[in-house]
Image (cartoon, rainbow, N blue to C red):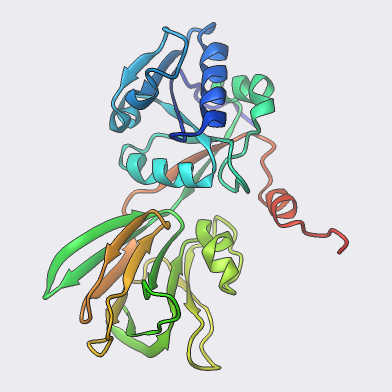
Length: 294
């Protein structure tokens, strides 16, 4: 495999308020300050990072100033960073200081052996598409957010069902009463959609999946559709309460009866950097304990 472009301007960001993540950020900075790489950290880490040989910038500037951003934390940290920096198209590399770590390939104990080859061009680069959600109220946009994993409509109250209508490319699909609906990318298929009974989709799959949550029917099943589809969800006027919309479980938008949610592919894809030996199915085996005796 040919050597790719090396990375020389490295951004390093960690999960806020995580001592473990900050420790790893410091180790990375100490490791890389002895090289000829330019290092950038967001302002929130200025007092926590011990080395002085770093450039302190606003978080949103990392994408434009760096040719690689290393994210130290769990999948949640990667999701947040990806949403906020996706427009810059800066490649992202994950160091796992969280739980499962589907999006963060490198263990904290592997910094010395895994990071240097990647910086010198020994890596694979993968594009993942995002979703974009717009909320319309009386034909005016009142909220918008992109999502790496999923866009989820849910009641906002425990043990309350919501009624809604689903459309694809302006064609009516069904009316439903349920606990909500998950619209997921392949990246998010191993997250909330998986726990809701949805399929696992390999990252290169050119589809999104719609997973009903506890529908009040025996025949409603997950649907996989091409990612070029435009999904419209209309919250029924008959709902007695106000449901909510979640993007990656991190951006929450309150809804009202009659609101319309439009979900479609985000125009810019995120770029993930992997070590050369990255194996998606090995990740599934290790994270989901496939093939292990009960």
